[in-house]
Structure formats: C-alpha cells, structure tokens
Image (cartoon, rainbow, N blue to C red; front, side, top):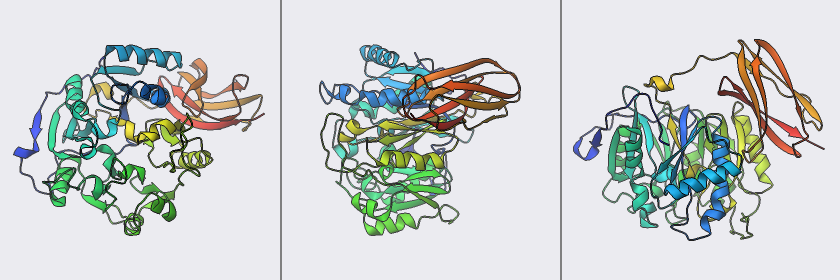
Length: 464
C-alpha cells in the first residue's frame, strides 16, 4: 500500500547547479532526529547482492526494528519486488508484529543502508516537507550503488513531495550529525575526500549544506580514510542527544576506534552555534570483540553510539556483550520518556553497519492538516510496584478524561509480549495488575497508549 498524505505538494525540481547562493542563504532546514516523526524508512534486506544466505543472516534485525517502531510511528518499508513484499508480510506476521502502522514501497535496491542513500526530509520556508536527493556513489565507488542512488527520487514520486536534485555533491546521511540548532559535526574523510567530492572545496561543501539543511556552524574532524567502507562516518563516533548534549566514548575507546588525538581534542572542545560548550555523556565500546550469531569472531569491538531516536523508543545496537546492559541503562537515563530497546546487530555488523545506518526518519509535515497535533490528554504513568517483581505488579496511571487506554509490554528485542486493554478508562486515577506468568526473568518496558497515541514509557524487572 502507498502512504497517503492529506496535502499533496507539486513536484518541484531544483538544481543547485543553476542557483548561485551565498554562504548565508538558507532555503531548507533539517529537524533533529529526536523531533517528532511521521515515520521511519527501512530498506529490507534481500539476497540479490550478497547471495543466498545474507537475508537469513540479518533479517531478524529488521523484524526487531519494525516491531519496536510500529507502535509509535509509521514504518515505511522499501522492498525489492512484490514477492519480497509478500515474504516480509509473512515474517512480520509470524513474529507477531502488527501491520496496521506499516506500509510498503516496491523499488529495487542494491543494499540496506537507507540512512546513506535514502531520502533526507527537510522543511522549506512554509514548513512543507521537501526531499533532498544528494549524490550517492557507494562510499566512493566501493560497492554497487546505481539502484540505491535513485531511491530519493522514487520516494518523492510515491509521496508527491518536492524533490531537490543535489547530485552535484555526494553526501551520506551517516556522515553527518547535527544538533537541530545549526551545528553539524562530520569527518573530512567521509565528505571532503576526493573519493566523494573531488571538484568541491570545503567552503563550497559547507555552502551546499548551509543552503539546504540550515547548518551555520561546522565542526570538522579529519577522520581516517580507508579505515572501513564508510571512511569513518561520524555516526559511529558520537551522537547529538539534543541541542546541548553529545554522547560519545572516552579517550581510550576513541583511540581504539582510530580517531586521532587531535580529532578527539576537537570533539571534546565542541561548542554549539552560540559558542556554548556541550554536556558530554560517555558510553563504552563492547567489552569483547563482536562474535556473530553463527560464531564468527570479527576481531574488533562494537560501538553503541550508532543508535536511532524514534518517537517513543530509542533503538540501540547490542552485541550479546556484558556492556549491553550498561549502555542501555546510560541511554535510558538520557531519554526518560522513551523506551530504550536493544537491537541485536551482530550479524549486520559483519557487513559494516549498525542501527542508525539502516534507518531514516521522516518528520511530521507541519503544514499538513493530516498531521495536525491531537489535543493532549493530561496523564501520568507511575512506576510499577513492586519493582522488581516475581508474581504480579501494579501499574497506575492518570488521565483527565474518559479514554481508551492500553498498556503494552515489550522485551528488549522490541517484541510485544503482553497487552492490557482498558476500553473505558475514567478520568482520574486508574490501576491495573500485571501477572508475570508469561514473562521470563529480565528487563521489560511498558508503554501507555491513550486514544491511539503512545504517551509514556517506563521499564520494569521480572525476577524469580
């Protein structure tokens, strides 16, 4: 099925080759990742590039992501053909993932890295959504890319959104991190290197990005060309949690990641567009080298910085490593109103990526009545008591009007394991009892949905 929007924009083709701009010209602005989404885009894995075992190796990661995302926003899945669409519907259904918030778009792709090759959504001066189509050349010609390169244009046609042709400059989504307030961090090795943009100076590259994304301050690290296929994308190194906070690693782990000491010093000294220093939160690498589910020791550690912020959840790469729980706890503290969910990426990591690499956000259309903000329902979701618990626990919540309420219980893989529905929840205090009969020991998240909108999340622990 196709995505329906209530206000259809006229397809507009804009080529920056024919527009002369100054460094201060801003045509479009890109909201930060933690701003409200209409949905998330995924390119589903297939076997057309890597052979008959690739999809079986990595598909569980996509099932977990779709399951975790669909309860809080649309999930737009790009599939290779109609046969693949039927297969994906079947595996999601068998995994217990509801399909009501999932739709499909049939386009051939080379690979799965939609963050790098997919559409980048920005706002124009009227707050209408526009799709940017940067050039994509397979990370400097390292892999086939012709099918993925046309995905942004194809999606612009599917959604009837304006399309901006920026093919004169190569830019991958994972190569940039921005704070939503005008500051961007990136490595030169993945943007300004001749394998990407041999005809453009750094000043010209900044001019493109300022004009089309609203970035006014650039923090450049040199990076390391050839360290891996992306040439050190910034999204494996650090994350803007918001416009005042950077999540990254300690000095020793950044050196292990092959960042140079001068680059580390620049990162730690970063200031925002108002020259105010950022707050820093440090997360470790994995304690051990990553071993795939089928037993291959990759010989290197994994980064948790490559996580994805969605409306109601934060998807964090995990590796069956002792540091998984440590990092999940740290990141949960950064996002108290979102459920932090670990996504097993061990097999995908062998192919060069993690969670952020295979996701791309679509912001809400601020100009469209179809995405108008619904009136908020005043509420409070309390921590369950007792917690931890073994037999049963009580969960209380408050709403200020008669509502349809459900409490959904999710495990760390993003799978919904239980649901408690209140068809009629009366104004004021309400309470439900959750029994642990169907829950194994471990960490779970529960989310409160009021009149069809997820509004709050908390975590709980089941013990023997």
